[in-house]
Length: 130
Image (cartoon, rainbow, N blue to C red; front, side, top):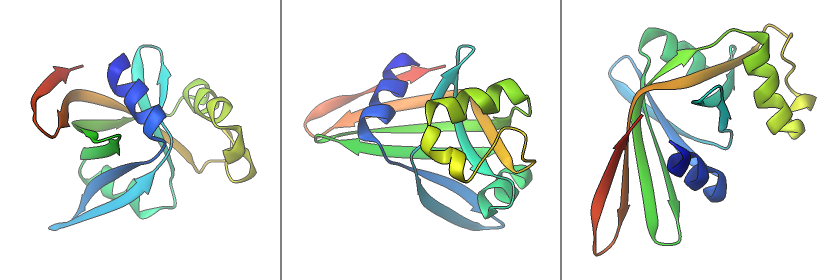
């Protein structure tokens, strides 16, 4: 899990894929945080991402850096605790202009049943589960 976290943090941007009905939806994200031994992402409850994950928690994210990439297939499970939201916002203080752990909109999800595949051109893929 630490290797995935480090890669995503260093990449800065990753792309999150969700499903809306039968249509995949992909968008850039930049938040990832380790909290209580799990990897978390953040969004707002008013965003389509939130509604898509409520209907189908299966997601995949992908990041590319220095000729290598990681794909993470997982279920995203909402953690509604203030502590989890606060940890995310403390890790990304620039988001505090838009979000607050008590605003009723901030939403954090942790990765469950995750399979990460690390790839690079000319090298065999490596898979880790967490």
